[in-house]
Image 1: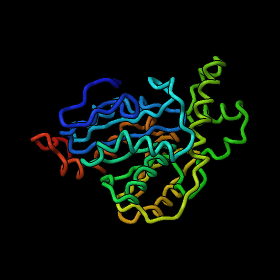
Image 2 (image 1 turned 135 degrees about the vertical axis):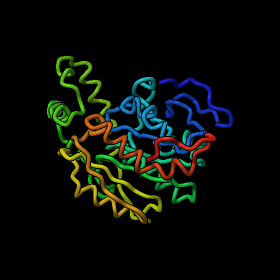
Image 3 (image 1 turned 90 degrees about the vertical axis):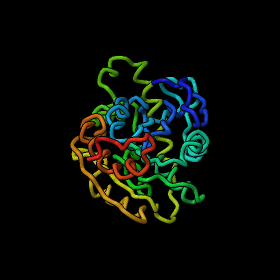
Image 4 (image 1 turned 135 degrees about the horizontal axis):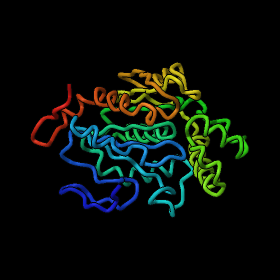
Length: 274
């Protein structure tokens, strides 16, 4: 992904980092995507190409301490992460946008939307949260804090969060575990405080075979929505965005198509909205 491309005319320049590409101001809707714990923005590779014909510009968000940001210090609590995201994404959030967060990314996306509502700023057209307990509940991997590296490794392999290949390479495995443990600190350290539900639509997505988050768990996100809310079950496990990518993209295409059509600025309406 190109972090150094010039921003389109009229869009504020953003230093390389959180935004993996400049958002397209002509798209009907910008969808900012937040990755899971231990993950990277690359998990959303190909999403922009798949959704662009529907008027949706996908912008994966890269947290520090991985891929091209590997030399940067990782953030291990939500508040400073939201501060940084507010700085880097804020200039792009006056035009129509939506947020998708997967697992830990769902907590981050919800936190960003909640902060913007509290401060009276533009809300997303929709918040889509995948594979995560609602924020008033313990995180899906709450037990990880008490696990040994061996126990955590086997759990991650079982749920698809770590490649079995890493078992043969101790240095790579240790590096991956350090990243995941730091990311999980964001989840473990979060303490929910009561507040108004989000006024934007909230869509919760869960994998049919996810051992960590059930459809019943996802239904509890309703407590954090003041308006439209629904739950979608898709094939796959905890990382269903890999297991059932085409299904997820179709779901997003249909869920967000009204917002994308309303915000289209390209001079022609999106061609694949139906």
